[in-house]
Amino acid sequence: MEDAYRIQQLITEHKIRKGQKIIGWKLGYTSLAMREQMNVSEPNFGPLLNGMILFSGSSVSKAVSYTHLRAHETSLH
Image 1 (cartoon, rainbow, N blue to C red):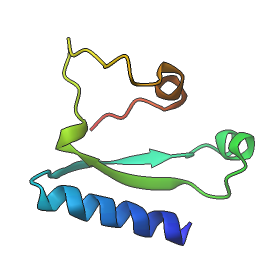
Image 2: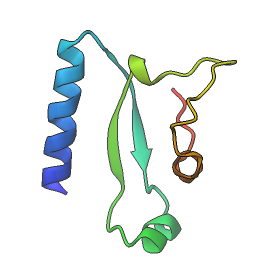
Image 3: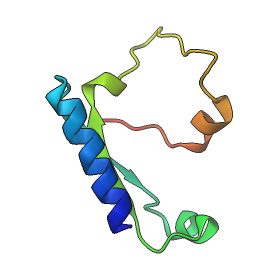
Image 4: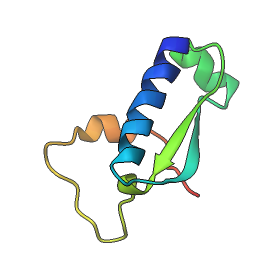
């Protein structure tokens, strides 16, 4: 997990240098049932950047895997 958080930190720092801003945080695997289902031992977290926002009415590229999108929880801030 340490490696994953370090990679996340490097990517976030790069995006911040390019002008993005942290606007919130995403928490994952907060329920025991989900952690058990995904074989994860603890909740995880990561920054939400302004470049990740999709405003109402936005379209999503067909190149995006819709299966992948469904697997994630909606993030609100």
